[in-house]
Amino acid sequence: MSTSPYHEAGKLMNLILTQKKSIKTVAFSKSKLTCSKSAYATVCNAIQRKPLLDSILNHDGGKLRKAIELDQARNQGLIYVLLFELLFGPYGNIRGGGKLKRIILKHEAALRATKEKVVQESSSINGTNSIGESTNNILPPKFPRYVRVNTLKSPMEEIVKEFHHLFEKYNVTQRDIYLDAHVPDLIVLPPTCPLPWHELEMVQQGRVILQDKSSCFSALALVHGHQETSKSSQHQGDFIDACAAPGNKTSHLAALVYKSCFKDRPTIKNPNNTPQPCKIFALDRSSSRHSILKQRMMQLAPRVSDPHDKDAPQKDPKHNTTFPVELCTLHQDFLQVNPQDKLFRNVRAILLDPSCSGSGIVNAPDRMADAFQNEKNKTAIDDPRIQSLSNFQLVALKHAMSFPQVDRIVYSTCSVHVQENEDVVAMALKEINDTIFDKNLKWKLVPPRILSTWKRRGIHPHTTLTLEESNSMIRVNGLDGDETNGFFVSYFERVRMGNGGDKDDNVQSDNVNEYVPKGSSIGIKGIYHPGTFPTTTSTMKRDVLSSSTTKRSTTTSKTSTSKPTPSTSTTRNEPSSVKQHDKKPLPKKIAKKLEWKRKQMERKRQRLQTKLSSTTPITKK
View 1 (cartoon, rainbow, N blue to C red):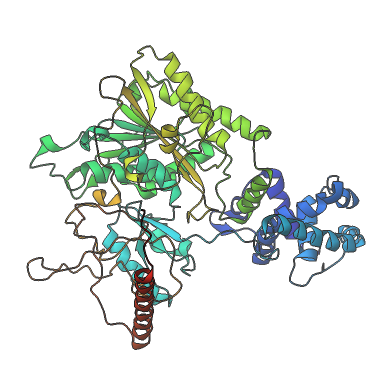
View 2: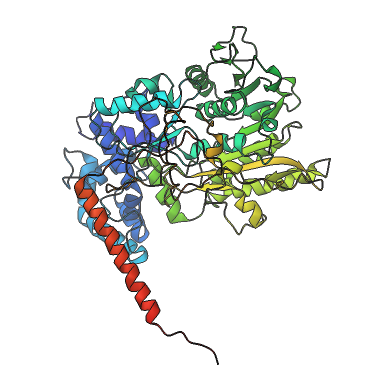
């Protein structure tokens, strides 16, 4: 066995390079680290610098790449680790010995000189180098910590109360908690929140889910993207999650359907007002991924089964009847599903989030390296893997559109490539609509109603998509200030053209506020996440989720409605549950500083008015 201090790190790096898997997938088994912490940290740093290492090796026709015989080496992972230690490591040298070390040190002077040239060339083009402000600080972007409350198991107020207890237990100093401005039941915490997330009881029990914000858009668009005024009309029927594993989107879909259609509805006193119970079919063709999906659903949802499960379902304690949303996990390839199968005869909506390149996921070291390489190449047209994925995605989307009874589809990816997003959408619309027997019944792109305030839209100009169609699609860019990983969402509806089906019926755009139950006590008395966490104390920077669950009397006390933040749009019927904290006296030092700023602004305004009044207007003769 090798005694090299880099043996374990090199082995881990080799697995990542050969298996094309993420570092977490390779390094963790059942949530436990399978290598030493030092080796894991070394590989994380080496992956972050890999784009720059490749640029150094490929410089001037790849002379250094040939000199160290990288392509012929059987242990390429170890070479990358040694190069990182020599050029970017904390000590600037390679510990231990060995043949690879001797080969690399033989070209040490050339490697260091080429490093300086590559950095200077990148700086002259972009103002900074191509990988950040500092060559020695290539780090993934720091997004807020997003925590989705699983409302199938716990209410918001219970989770908020637990968070405040955890803040006390772990001595957390920055205790800002926000609601997300776009996704209901999504809590936003600072990226530096030091809680041991995977060890928390609420996470292990499935009462909260550590889910990225952008990945919540798929289920949100499918459930709340409808353009009709009647909410209940859009949820009649069953759902299919075509590529469901590991199940976060499936559980989110179940929670949204339950909350929108069944929660807070009287099922016994007025049974005629209750929608029919529905099923969500969660499919995956991989046996291992299906096993993970089934275990995950048993953890997150009250009622999980398969079509042949004879076990009695659990009871919903609130309605005193069987839980109305049933999750059916199926080990089945979606492309092999017969659209005429009687099992799916009541399906009216499909969530399709197929395998993709994952190029939008940038908050992980290995994904960040791929993102920088994609930015350098600027295009994926010549990448055979991207083309293969795009072909598969097109087939899957066309298959979803072939279900005769389905009238709503969401197609989403965590990719930033046009080939996997807009191109797939455009080809599917053209090929399917041209072959539909009823020429008046067409699939159409529709902007998701609940995401109407999201700014970034589909890429335009496009070869076949109109500006209206491009603006109907949602894009997320984690490297351009969106505070979440890159994502793409398109929402389709089957409409009858020429009879008003191609119009929006003058429905006003909505936001997340409409879907917060009015009058419900969820322990929220604050503002939405403003988009970034403030770095200085101000009147906005305060806890916006109260740990208190005490109800205030609406007849004896008045509360002031919070003003919307820049990333939030207002609605006419603001829920009474979303209110700002009562004003508290500020510390003297802060109050003095704010007063000084106010006076400065007032003086500036007065100077501007004086300047304008002294200017003689020019009149035409």
